[in-house]
Image (cartoon, rainbow, N blue to C red; front, side, top):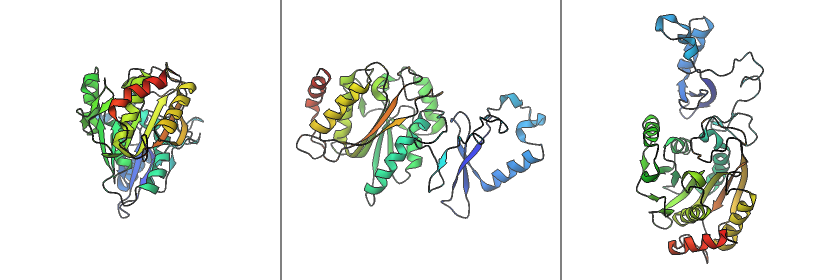
Length: 323
């Protein structure tokens, strides 16, 4: 059982608004109708909330709760609630004080920056397909919900799934399919044609997919640029082994000077611990985290998407790493 906090309102159907409600773990966020919210508030006001009723055989201690509203560090009184965008959805910009509960919350600032670029570029383009490297389907489901006008596909390599039962449970809980025939983890390749999707999202893949190997990581970024015709989004923990400011400078030089893929946006993510960082295998709890959004429109020698030949990927990235 969870205690929910209303953090936004969905007015897409004006006659039937629904409230976005988050619970402390982020596993079971949902929406409630206006009638449901009014009913729960009435029950609590008269001291007969279902969570306090012994008749239902539930212990109050079993309810996962937010900090008490009477305390100074509660999400309400400490001004820690998420922001709300023009659609009424809860959002987590870089300036927001809400502490990320999981990887999805952590990547909120990147998605918000991405939405501003996407809204300017994608008008009238149908279909707009997005590829997300997410073996759980959990983050991909959030992206699909946040960008309902797009087609989102989650992919993973089945050979990587050492925790297959846990991932399968995630997928069944979140009801989002994961394609397992596109990504080849060992070769850092994507079995897709040049420019076959609009955007590719690579969240924390340096350790999770590439096992901390910078050559494989850069090869995967290059593959993403090959199959995307619009943007590639990357987020990483920067202080783990092999990930530092020097590495970031190498990536920038490689992207801009050799691959004609400039970084359009670069920013920082929450540095503190994240209790459910399900997309990361870096083992770093508190670390500098960065994201960048890269243009794939002219990627490749001579310009034009699709110019990044697979045969050259390993050689080019390896020479860059050993500079």
